[in-house]
Length: 246
Image (cartoon, rainbow, N blue to C red):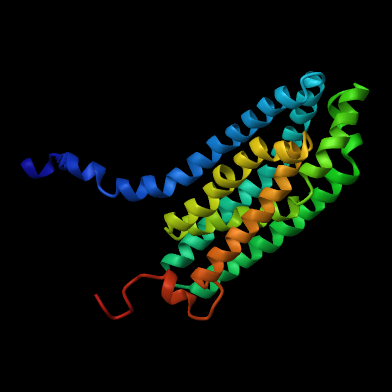
């Protein structure tokens, strides 16, 4: 009989594109942040050609080692942001604001301790770490020179990474984009390009801790404006209908 036949009904094609604007708004900051990592590396390599032309090969090799160390350090932080997004997103949807903020505080604490440990290791053991990759004394010496300034405020890097992820998980694309993208495109890239003009070649490397300082200031301002940790913050961040209302 006709009732036993499986039927397939194609919905209107317009339905396929519903909410795409919101999806793109939330996904764009993360995508552009990864593009920004490449932009930062490109700017540093360019500056090394300008300021370290005589020892370019050595400097680039050392920077490659530093990049690998930072990438290794970043992977657990990436896992932490993904876990945070899952927990925060579910509790935000359940209107459990205390657990939302509590989850953020936990990830901030874990990321700070983790990055502080890595910062100490990077600064105190730059030589032994670089020796894992190469046996060239010149490259090891250059890594010992550039790694400490690059890692000077690495303990701030992790916590600052948690805030854009947090705002993205609650659907606040504006704050996520502001915190995630301004640090790269407004602070880091310009500092790498122009700070050496003021203090010389060492400015290439001190652009990193200065970026963390400016990023911390920006994050503090956004948190203050949003009153994220205030008692009434849930009223600002939970724009859902009150229980019992449609």
